[in-house]
Image 1 (cartoon, rainbow, N blue to C red):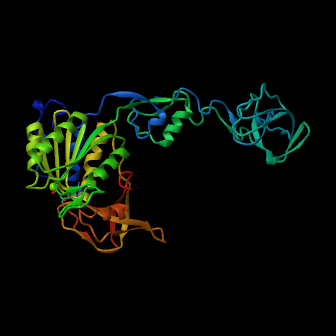
Image 2 (image 1 turned 180 degrees about the vertical axis):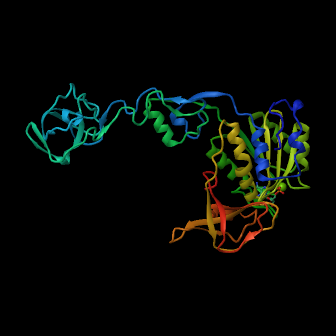
Image 3 (image 1 turned 45 degrees about the vertical axis):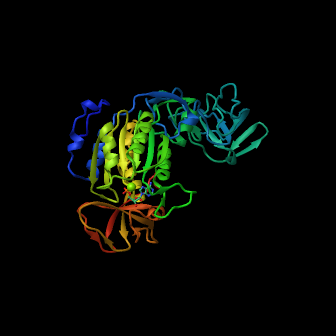
Amino acid sequence: MISAFSRTPNIGTFLMDCFSAPDLLTVAQAQQLLVDAMSPLTDIESIRISDADKRIVAQDVVSPINVPQHDNSAMDGYALCDAGLRSSTSCELLTEFTLVGDSFAGRPFVGELIHGQCIRIMTGAVIPVGTDAVIMQEQTVVNEQAVTITKPVKLDANIRRAGEDIAQQQVVFTAGHRLNAIDLGLLASLGCAQVDVWRKLKVAILATGDELTYPGEPLAPGHIYETNSVVIQQMLSRFGADVLSLGIIADDKEAIAAAFTQADDYADVVISSGGVSVGEADYTKTVLDEMGRTAFWKVAMKPGKPFAFGKLPNSSFMGLPGNPVSAAVTFQQLVLPALFRLAGTTMPTPKTLTAITQTEIRKRAGRTDFQRGVWSVDETGQVIVTPLSAQGSGMLSSLSTANCFVVLTQDNAGHAAGETVTITLFDEFLA
Ligand code: AMP
Ligand code: MG
């Protein structure tokens, strides 16, 4: 396995491993190098649960209480006491009970039930001591203080036990868990108003290129609109990072040096796009070599290929290719796993399916292809996929139309229509 460079922030003590990595890395090798180069953050903060979506739990969360707190009713009906239900010997069961009170959610019955008694009870209301079962109201006939049951009832029927959802002292989330909306509700159900999480990653992004123009501005001849920082900023905010966007930076040594300095002062990770192809990387590489260290890698992936990785004085540096599809795919495939590691967790494995390709797929052996495709399930229940005909790495519309990658391994040489292929479904970052 290729090892990454040292985790120490001190540039002077860098090991050379990642810089002596082979010219052409596989996707898996590049992912591993990047993940290994990250030391997870160590700063913990306690935040309100309403602010904790996408945040990563820093220490195990143990439930301080039973959920539910009390045995309670799963039905609107009658809680009844019949000693015969508990008896090991067969005996006649009661069909008529004396109504002695009621229990509503938030207003429990005070007292215990004895053999032959029942109370009116509502869903969620506390079960009094002595209850053997709850019978739903549809299976009863009520006549003043007498309740007759019209169907036999089993011991413990319709009773939700204290702690059956979550037991006191149970570990609810382990450290490294990334919280979602439901998880926040679960924390609320435990009475937790705050949760300890790792601090947010700070990421600075910039887009290099003399030809780039901000949307909304007129387009000069030969110019194009800037898209990479729009896409990457959104993906980073879905990840849950604080983002500083430095916008468009000219292909100019001083401008790049000033931007890298500002980015490095702010960020844990600096992400640029553009200027990493052969022959164009000069300023990026010159500036990075003056400020820290850089490795320019070729990753055997399509789209993608050129990718820069390095270290600035205070931050890690990742240089994405400029083509919009390449930038988005390398960000998702290479950068995100490293960001997850830095943030204290592991990136979820993408959901993978096998599907029948509806059209021929052409591919040259040598790189892992992430072809954009549209998958669905046909009327027979078979997963099918149609790779898009336009697969150019500058065509953002291909990523927009697609809902999956058809992943073709390095040695794969293509498929005829009707063959089985592997697809990975777009995750929360691409969908
Ligand atoms: P580069 O990697 O700088 O050689 O750029 C490769 C291609 O991507 C060129 O056609 C660029 O114009 C285009 N490109 C670079 N950066 C961006 C960007 N931020 N937004 C849209 N297109 C870009
Ligand atoms: Mg460029």
